[in-house]
Length: 262
Image (cartoon, rainbow, N blue to C red; front, side, top):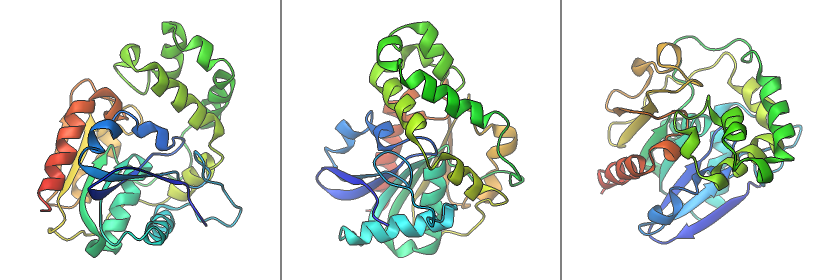
């Protein structure tokens, strides 16, 4: 299956993987600065953004890791840095565990899969989340300039929802509304978690926000599941999308992690 991959900038390759119900547009805050030092590849996962979803597409994290890697190899990439948010972070970890020779460094932004007990069913209310996104998507370009609309869509995602960029919000609502792969990806994570070893030679930084309501610290940030050599950071006033709430801090950590590979 061919995934939508866009390229920006020049330098060492760095691959950005978004989360469930999101799209490559989520990385817009990081691209201007990262493109000064890296050749960026943004990937849309199956049924997200510009990538199609087929009935036969396996949507568990390990299968998605294999699919992403296959598509990157078709682009001629033999080694690269990885950055992933939420499900994208889990996929990055799977790639590094299965093919460490290809990964130069890894930065996980609120990576999924590090939960104490695997989920046996979807979160309650997930159907309502997508339904709300579909409804809001029709009026988002007109209403997201208003705080009441932004609050409805982003208060649980970001403690800094009032200051989120307008275009980030519009893109996020559209990505969720259009994500046919949302529920298949949810089902692909059930009864699974990440607990594989990754060689210490790969620099790894894991970043969570102190206000992550999607993957809360008590149940979904189990440090013992992460590679023991990983640097673990908690950013203040930051939610489930650290690249939105703490853009400069995230950029600095990505650059520092990448430097350790050189």
